[in-house]
Image (cartoon, rainbow, N blue to C red; front, side, top):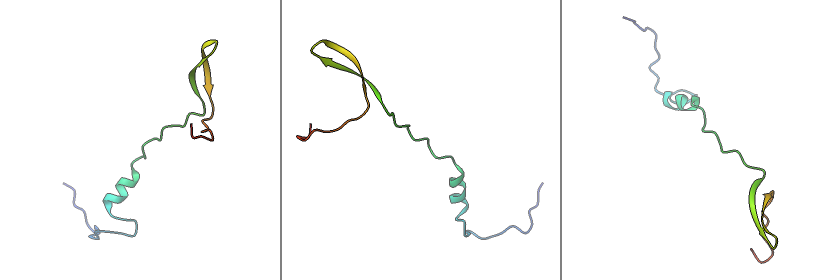
Length: 63
């Protein structure tokens, strides 16, 4: 049996509640890395070819 003495009875502290402090210790979910480029298939007059999409810029007409 363990006896605790001099245990604080404060519910909150300047660092937040116990639940908030425990939640802050959990690692944040990893963000999905942003692909700088993406492999695509391009249909051209000579047929289907492999391509590399490095930027997506809308045209003046919004397409």
